[in-house]
Length: 405
Image (cartoon, rainbow, N blue to C red; front, side, top):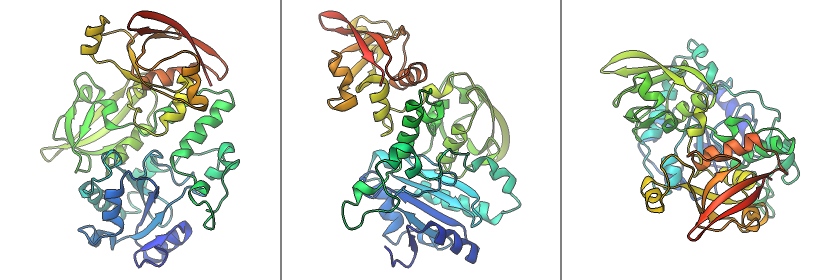
């Protein structure tokens, strides 16, 4: 790849310099090479002649394979994805983001229609730049306490600035998800509550009740009843144009707008319906982030060690609850996994067993998801504290104590 005609390889400053020289926008693909996830779309974007070629020709293309020296003020995206893209102007202004959980979950999915829409959307923004610069303000990165990942204490102890090409390459490489892990650990070791946007990063549209059409920019497929999206008046078929004043080029752009949203408040959304623009208000109630499904995120595993001692929990369905004589509104988290080593063995060592049903913890008895429980524990309890828990087994009710780590 170092001599590829299209892709600049692992040289961020050269990429920006080339974008300034040519006047083209800069396309930055961040790819965790050892990870199987997203390999299907990655092959289409990187290796093959596809329908994307005419669009890629209009970009300066940069590929980054490790996060060791990323400028964290500039590169803020969903760190739990193994294939992410940011679109820049040569002056550093971000046009938008792309990242697909559809491709993350299905490594063989090689469809590129949503990526093509993002490429086209960023080109349209580029053509309107700098007259549209004010609308892009919300897309820019936030201040960060560390300039690069290898300056965050837990990573500084383990990783060099450069990859060890002569030895253990993978072991010298900071993977993107470790950035979020390191920030959470940094707060935890200082005895601080982990901020909610770090526990529930880049919330999916489903968090506010939206399902988007997979191969679109941001077209609404369905709206959940009694959700924030339904209350705002969003309907299936709506094309989401902007949220919080930010033009959308992908569902990742919507997730970024939600990531930056207040813990409670209102977001303006502009949609097109039947060719007519409508302005709607998304009202975000206190605690809305806790509805985010973080169960499949790689970054959730370390949080399970901190707050749940390695328990992997699943909210029992109404049918399973009925079969066990449990009410639909009560806490009933099924222990479907149990860590075996290090911090993730703490729950096992405390007496928890696989297939237990957690019905009370830290005084909580109301129904909630694993993600909501992790957020509560991480924000409420410090490392070293212990909480009481009650689990059900086929023949007994057991009282246990879970250590916070």
